Image (cartoon, one colour):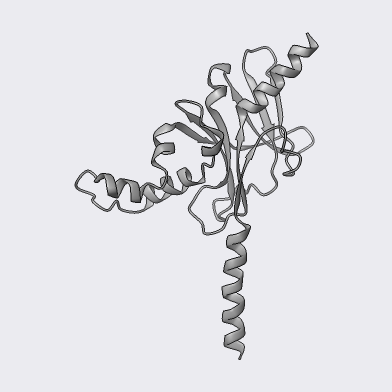
Length: 191
């Protein structure tokens, strides 16, 4: 009886965890609803722009698999419906840690499609860099990126597990250009 109860609880917990994982595209209109406070402004003294935020669920640890924040730069802007970048990070991790199906030969198109979960997005990504945590004068933690205006339209911040996991809770992509456009619109009215 105890074994049956344990197995039932174990199976139910897997189903609950899977239902808990979800993606959100974060823009100014929904950030508060998602419990995020994201700031965007022009940097002082230079022509760059600064975006910063905090998410208590981002873990900066080498021992625990947690969420990380990544700055992602693409060749061209990514359509809102394709901004779920978790597949890119999952496939990148898999490609780095497991042997390819055909290690001595080029992969066939079918193998490439099966092995690389999101080939269209993967071909779009030019650069990823992990964003490290910063601390302000009061000791509060935040994550920040400073961007040249020429790359804002194709820059994103992905927050989620940086390795393939079965459940990651809420993972999201911050569409930086949406914050830039809101900033420009608000400052156009002031001038």
